View (cartoon, rainbow, N blue to C red):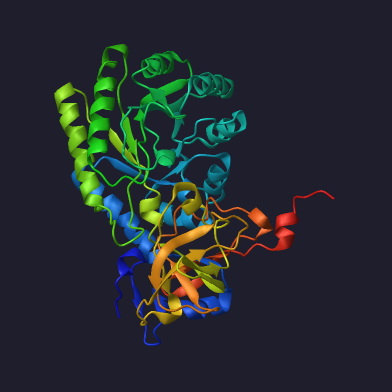
Length: 437
């Protein structure tokens, strides 16, 4: 049986005959009985379907496209293998994310290394592995990487991260393509022009193209079109200097649905506006159409992930609010506290019951701001009920912490209805393993 919030959950989510939430043929109440709560699960079918959708929709309108999964949304060895199976590349932002790729022998030529302050050790790790592109972000990095590549006797392919000063109208903490940002070289200050010239003259760097990232999540089409107009027009000015744009990347930032009153555009809409803008600009400017590199993270993994909690204490303040406390919170999902992110929720074991009360789902951490879902109508709740929060695959676990020395939850991958543990629940001993008495 379908339910009204099905579109927020992984593909093949439904209400089963017991009145419980079922995902990919697996009863979530049974899953909790086996693994406990809090618990994170990913549905492999949904992940692979989103990978295929991106490849299909972008290559249909722009055949020379490489989809690179943005690892910062969440990565581990199991996921890296899936992305490699599906023909995707990887966008990494740290030596740790690169180490995951190395652990599964991910093809180095399909890896793109981002970041505004890469260390010497991280750049050396990347160069030694032979990654496809380092996306340089500042003048310090240009010099550091060029010297490193010279010592290694290689010519490292790079992209330059440009700031086109285009506002994508998302949260200020996740807006990255405007002038006042720590990322990239701004066009309007002249830094971008200076960076292009420095990279073209660098002895051991090979400038392959330009990159920009506007922010996330972006629900509008216009910012991509505007930014591509700006960046490609900028690039054309350096044709006489020897700049041949082999790659262009507008990053990612594609939105997903977190709640029913704000659903995202479909992937093909993003693909069409980006492809048409590149074709139009290249034709007008007289430059060859470059390879397009797209870096979706949340839009591939977000819907595939679900966070599951148990209800504990319930506190009602008459005429003000009813707090329902869960056994997780900002330690495993800091997004509501950090970004004012909004989520939806269902009661796993009461899927056929109608919502009758307005509650706030609070976390267990020692902060007043530890609220997962504020003011949501749910069936009458009791201690021991099970709550599922959809669209939890991106940035929840990757930003998880041990605040209050709470162990991070386990991660389950649903594979054709069979749950597979891909990350164990942390123990107290795990958290103390690096401490020195």
